Structures are given as structure tokens and as C-alpha cells.
Length: 284
View (cartoon, rainbow, N blue to C red):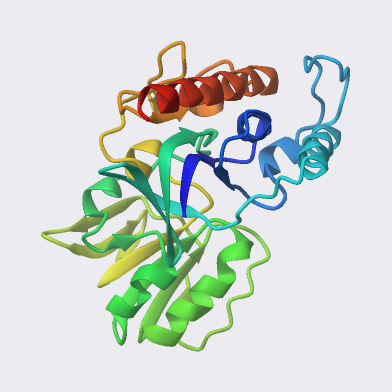
């Protein structure tokens, strides 16, 4: 099934984009967590969102989610790990599934942590972001699994069932990793090293020799997610119409730069959808 628009992200920009895509009667798919934006729900107070003075982040998140539900809009909770240009648009890889869309709107927010040194160099050469896609490649081998969110622990268990040895690196509290072949490493990696392929994960006080590494996180950096995407200082470069340097790809919200404000994100989500619709009209 081909969609007119694929929208990635559950913050204010993503919600604004899907609402307007629905109003404009476009066929779209929306990739987001069921709770939409954890960052938004944890915000203490939002004072500049029009019509909602002194609203808490949790209240604003509930309002946005309720708006979507009232319009029968539900997110696909699969994590997109790659966006690839194809003849008629784009192919999006999410878990074991792929989706086709004529345009893409990136509402990725801003990564709290920058990519680890060497991470981008070894993507496809030992570093993967999808356990179910690439786990079988490491059957009986030694791998590291760096995980940023407890909701991905089932993927760690899956990888443990395949690999002989797993260095599990949970970058969150309250982990529950019980596989016998998993060694818990309670420190963050600082570098990935190797030759033609990844060979070791480096920490401040040493390293682990591995055949591969999986990075399980809710969002990828834009440059990794979309090959060839122009970025500046970690942000996606966009024009005033929210278009990027790749025809058919648009971006909105914090991922396009400061100010990091929900009202700005919502406005850009609106602009991005209208620009995508105009692009579709011109490229029938």
C-alpha cells in the first residue's frame, strides 16, 4: 500500500502534521509512540501555547492525543530505521516491514545524545538499529547491545537468544535483563572502532571486542535515517516551506533548529503538510 505522506514523530510537529493531513484528505501513515512524546509529557509547565495558558506538559500531551483520537488518527508504533529513495518516492524500513510513501515529513525532535564517535562510519558494517532485521547475522557471535529505553528490552532478549555472548549496555534505570549469556555493562560507549567492519566498542576505561553492535533507541539522527540529508549543527536544513535538500522530504519542529518550542513545532508541522500536498499536486 502506497501512502501520499509518511510522517515520523509524535511531538507537537507530528501531531499538527497528521491532523492537517487528515483534514486535507491525504492517505498517510504516522510513526509515533503510543504515548506520543515523552519529552512533552514530562515538561513541567508550558506558558506560551496559544489558548492553553500555564498548561503542564502532561495536560498538553493529553490534549494533543485526545485531538488525534477524536479524528480517528492512530500512530503506527514501529520505529523507522531507514528512509530510502525509490523510483516513485520513498521506502521506509520499520522493523520487519517496509512502507511506501510519495513524500516524507520528519518531525524527529532533537536527540538528547549525539551519535557516538564512529557510529555513522560503521552503519551497515557492524552497527545496526533493528534487532529483528539483522539479528540473524550474528547467530553464535559476540555483540554489544546499547539500549536507551526499557521498552526495547524484548529486543535485547531476542538478540540474546541468537548470539553466543551479549554485552548489554542499558542507558536507563530499572533494567531487567536476565539472559544468562548477557553481561551487563553500566557505562556508556565513547567510540566504535574497527577496520572494514566494527571490531570493538570503546569505553572510558577499556573496550569490548565484538562482531557487531545494536543501538536500540526511539529515534535516529537525521543524517543516519535519511542518507544524503543536509544538516547544519545537528539540525535538518530546511527552507521556509519546510522542504529539505531532498525533493519530497520535509521537516518540522525541533529537528529544524531553535527555538525549541511546541508552538513553533506545531506551526511548522502545518507548513510541512501543505508543502507536501503542493509537491504531490505538482508531481502527479
